[in-house]
Image (cartoon, rainbow, N blue to C red; front, side):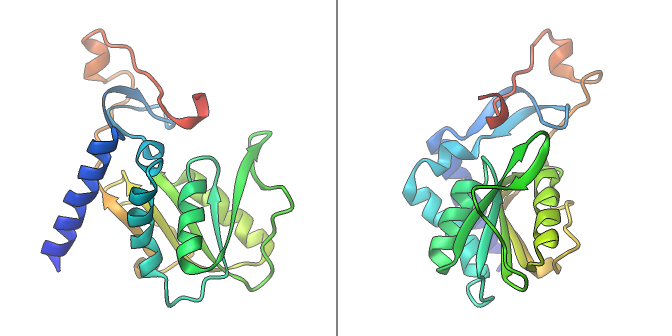
Length: 200
């Protein structure tokens, strides 16, 4: 079993490298910390065959959970949510940020009692997922699971609305991160860049 998991990680890492989605350099993370590595999932998800394989790992975990709707935070989680929903035969919707808060817009809704799977591309602290969870609670949805492509927390992020077996990451890694005042890259004179979707 461990060999299978190791092989899967190697295969996923190869997809990231081939698509240019694994970036090396000096990056400013959403948390304000700095890192020498950044997973830009949009670059791997632009290839439908990679998106199908990666999202298939999540869909396979929840194929017997009778998922009614998959909800993801915009922008990063939209492609993940759409493909997972397609494979599960479920509805796909997304939340988006307006006036600093995550909201369901465009007429999207979750009916009370619907079984909900939350999907995301990359999780470091889980901030966006926690916001989506609050929206699902407000709508009366029933949590069936949470799935994401990359876990940069090394498996440390936990979402208490689901059991451990109902939380899945395709690829788990312990991100190297530094506070701005302790960043060795800054001390070498390098300037951090922010490659995430929020700044284009």
